[in-house]
Length: 279
Image (cartoon, rainbow, N blue to C red; front, top):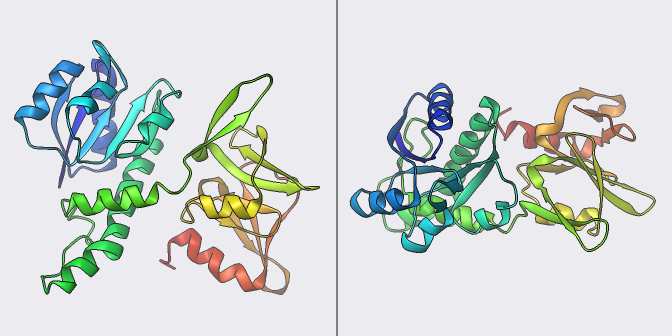
């Protein structure tokens, strides 16, 4: 069981989020709902830290980032907001996701899945080594129903994972830079020496990085280098089919310039990447 706090000044939005969270995971427990910066600061000073925090950025009496100026937040944070211009600032704190309103049930599910995945990965890479080196009993992070665990270890893992890019700044007309969230990118593609990022809406942006550089700076759980032309996002995959000579063809939810073919040598890696090693 995991307890969480909602900081949201729109009562309807808070109720909707609570309902979505109950549907996504009935074991989650709401500690409280706060609707202002001042009340949030007071709440944190008189209550133990929750295990998960949902924060709207624009509150009635100011920006939610003012809370972090007064309180050392030591739990994972999921931002829920109608504004995308604060994404970069959000990921400087313990943020694991940034959901734009109106929020869908699938986005909430995906954010919680990400939290649980980070928890399990943190257990494997951090807690196992630390606990066993001290001769302590094995922690129960690997069990999905046990989510309390050592949140400090989870946050260490989150900070380690921050080396992966969450956004790019794309030059547009004039002197403007357009923020492009990695979560909105369906695939990267190279043609005639030009690398493009294509969003789930089919919008294409020219990138300054090579595909090799992009492969290195993106979370390998979320992106797979299918071949020399394509770097694909897991969320964009519609189906995977067998092809000639034990190769595979990946079909995305949107059209691609050419067929995405994965070699026989990498077919096993593709299946393991997509299933998370679960078959």
